[in-house]
Amino acid sequence: MSIINLPFASLELGFAASLICSLLLVLTTRWHGRYSLDATHGVQKFHNTPTPRIGGAAIMIGLWLALCALPQPQQELLLPVLVAALPAFVFGLAEDLTRNVSVRARLLATMASGVVCWSLTDISLQYSGLAPLDAMLSWLPFSVVFTAFAVGGVANAVNIIDGFNGLASGAVLISMGALGLIAMDAGDIHLAQLCFVICAVTAGFFLVNFPFGKLFLGDGGAYLLGFLLAWMSVMLVSRNPSVSAWAPLLACGYPVFETLFTILRRLWCRRHPGEPDSWHLHSLIKVAIAMRYFRALPAPLRNACVSPFLWAVALVPALLAVQFAYIPALLLNAAFFSFALYLATYACVASAGRRRARRRIESLRSVEEFELEGTEAPLAK
Image 1 (cartoon, helix red, strand yellow):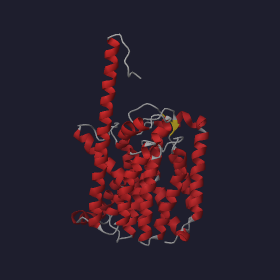
Image 2: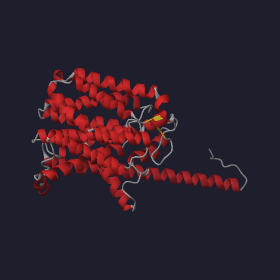
Image 3: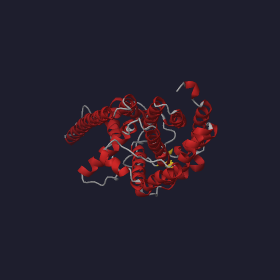
Image 4: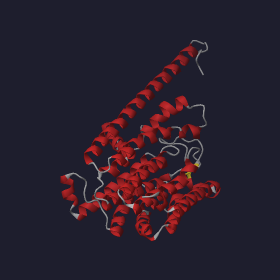
């Protein structure tokens, strides 16, 4: 696809609308802050200033305005997807505003969005490259349920990695861009254009979220972007049978790896898989790297320093997906390699974090011993 075929009007309108709406949400915080401000305390809270967490609204508005500027073929592709995304977005936004929507309800809402999108587009996963699974996918009810489950899983995966300024939106930009490049190489111009339009809209929010964290994505935004990422993946495979089903899965590798490992880690520790904790990779990078090497920076910038490390983790499987999109065997090997890289990164960062915590404890004990003796600890700072 030549660059001149890109729908620049929709790209510019979507980007501008998302950016302007994001800025307006920040400037009008005094009006909606009673409902929209995110608390500064909690297991997974790292910011010091109450911040609006309704950035998903800006993205949704940007998408609908970009839809108006798209050519008719792309409008016909995107319209049912945006309609189907409403359950996932609304339930997520309701949690942002009320803090009273259960994880189960939000998961079911994202799955419902998948079912609605199938009913509107008649698209579902029909093959995976695994013969036993493909035999079951040939039965339409199973195919629809499997598709809804996969869509819900990816949407929740994006929500799980939404922990620091620019992390989730940046990861989505990488994954969505990879899907667009694969579609472009497959000759699916219309789908490629949709992927790049979604990237443009996401980028408008990204500029307000990163690096200063003036506006957060929130559950509504995370579920919306996660759903769009999942459904573009389903459409890519459905519309282009030459593209392996492993390609979009690998393109979304980082949030998928984080989610799978989090579930296994919590089960191993005999904890509920849905119980929040501070042992995500992004949380460990905050402790082991950001707090050590960037502690002189203001808190928002220090938090933002976490994201580039994880963008690099997300970029590896995304690039491999683009490179080997038509070769299942190489994609499978690339998936194992990328997951091994993720685990190695996690192990290294966790080890560094434990050493830092141990030194901190030893330092505190030293201070206590000097105080008990009535002298001043020489390193007590």
